[in-house]
Length: 320
Image (cartoon, rainbow, N blue to C red; front, side):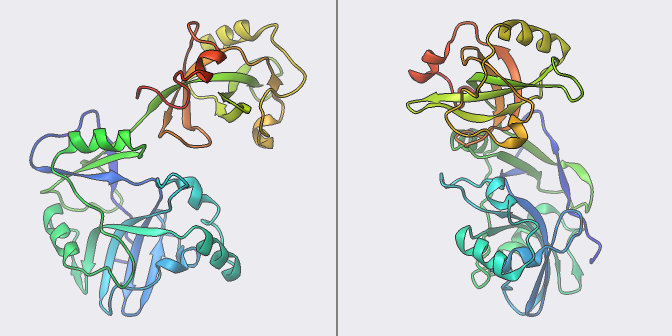
């Protein structure tokens, strides 16, 4: 059992309604396999790296037994929503004093959703429903770990998680065994994408060029000015690059139009423009300070920056 890799979900095209399936929230965190042996806990990443030192608050075992479990390490942002970026700074930390400081400031939670071994018994050969039953019999109170809920109605859960700004759902076939290291259609994932309108405040050229537009720097208008929301490069092919170049021609300005500081990695080599062009962007989740996995969709000729300031679709309108 020491060479395990976690089972992976396949992207689905529709949420199953068959009663053979049950559904869980898709967590925006760090996947981990948990090895419990008596009084010790070892956390391993998806790539089998030992990561226990980065998460000392998760290292209390639920008992004196031996188990192998599967789960996700999460942390909440200031909106109370699981957010990978809250964890990102901690992933590679190893110095105990630094880790302790981060753990006190942004404590992590371990969501345990599968039980793969108990003692010498290999549970991966059991169907999903039996593994879940065995997991529910394990008292996680002492460790502080959590057992996430499962739902019969995937359509309802999909809609609810979208409304709450969560990452999505995972649907699991109940008669399926656990397949370590495989990406299986017995687990289907449905990540939400949301579409919003944003104002272009700059653009970045393709590496090695000065005038081939490859990414947009976009923001959201507010009472304090245009707030930077991120760099959007996905979705901009040759045709879109030519169109955007034409629309931004003549709008050059010498300084950034954003009210806040643009990160150096995005600002380096940027061409700043007057903030008048509005574009639609698809992104994962809503309400975050920076767009997550943004993808350019279209120019909004029917909107200008003032429309967004007056309560338009900036920050995530209809889901894509």
